[in-house]
Length: 129
Image (cartoon, rainbow, N blue to C red):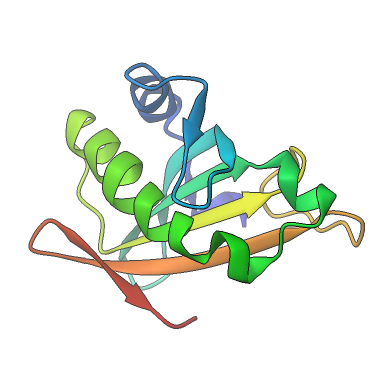
């Protein structure tokens, strides 16, 4: 996976600058940005990956409780950060996890949810994985 990832440290730094550490969401819960980066796919497509830590997932918040948060994070966080960094992507993947975990790793004890969004006309359009 590392070979396909554009390790854009500068992007991650730009992404984190205009944000508060924690973001209030439609669910009423909070999430903190862990990292944001652009990943180059084998077909040449560029995907934005935005990974958030949401401790409430460990306390029982399930997917249904946070479902609306994904589009809020894509529209209100990912797109503005990508634009500020001068990045264009075809797809944004937003992930929520109950604790920090390295990208590409799995841990059966960690709760993680993902949603993907095609980017069209400056909008996040939900796409089924």
